[in-house]
Length: 206
Image 1 (cartoon, rainbow, N blue to C red):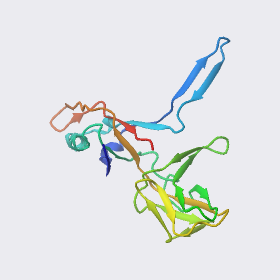
Image 2 (image 1 turned 135 degrees about the vertical axis):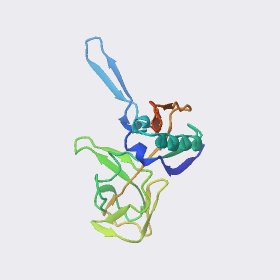
Image 3 (image 1 turned 135 degrees about the horizontal axis):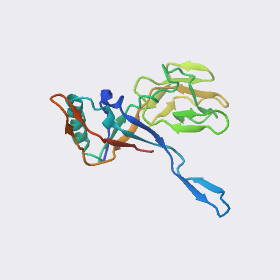
């Protein structure tokens, strides 16, 4: 298997449905109460791209993409139309806290925070869009002295940020996914129409 750094056809992706899922065990006690245990540390996203297929051309593009990925074998990039930016719009270097300098650490993982101060979820961002990442140290945006690996989302500094300095970043990002079926069912509904009721995709977690 391999990961192909190519994005699923965007016109189809923007019409898809899906979102995050979690795995929680719920045990009902004899007295009627519950005990719950979250088995996954990170949420996992699932999508159905079939809703985005509107024409024969859309279906032809998806068919070619599916065949090149060999069904479930190879992963690829997916643009989530709702959640693809560090701040919901144009990224800035102050959008997300990704760490605090200690004078020696030079690598920081891009993350996105969901929720407020009660129990926020920090999601690792492993597929930032090339050229979209902005970085700041202690509130000062940096135009040089750092790089980002777009295959992992790790930001590396030439010189370690000073002890106590806040490291922040802004970015656009894609979701690493794969097809969740080795079968593609296609229905031609008219001369220029086509449907694929189910094209399931699942996120590849790090």
